Length: 195
Image (cartoon, rainbow, N blue to C red):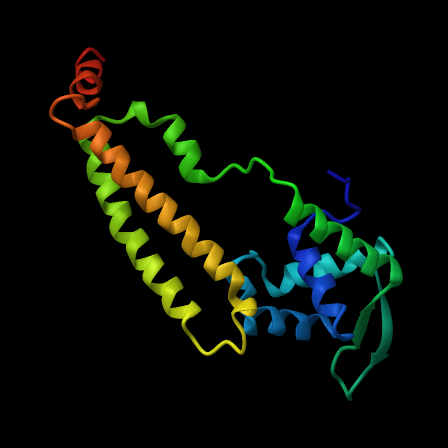
C-alpha cells in the first residue's frame, strides 16, 4: 500500500474527471453528482474545493486558466499533470488489485451485539432486512436504467452483490438466534437475566 500525497478518495475521483478534461471546481462537483458518484464517495461542494487545493499543492493538478466575468469571483480551471495521471493510474491499480480490511459500521455493531437482548436483536435484524430489500430494489432499478453501457454502473452491480451477501447473512444470523433446537437465543437471553 502506497502512502499517498492526497489520500482522500474524493481526490481520486477529481483526478479521474480532470483526466478527461480541465474543469472548474464547481463543474467537477456538478459532474460528480450528475454521474451518481455521490452514491460511492461522500462529498460536498466545499470538500471538492478543499481536495482540489490539496491536489494542486501536491503537484497532481495545475491551474490552466483563470477568468472573471464582471463582479463575479475568479474562476480557475484545473487540469491534471503528468504526475497526476501517474498517481491516478497507480492509485486505481492499488485499490482494484489489493483487498483491504475496511471498518463498516454494521461490522462494528456485530462485534458488540451481545450487549443487546436477543429478542431486540432479532427485531432489529428483521427491520434491517426490510431496508436492505428496499436498497437492493433501488440498486437493481438503477442498474436496469438507461446507462449507455453496464460499465458505467459497475459500482451498482458491486453494491447489489454486497446487499445480496448481507441479506443472506442477516437471514442466517436470525436463524442462528431463533432455531428452536440449536439457537443461541436462550443462552443469550439467560446472560441478560444475570445482568
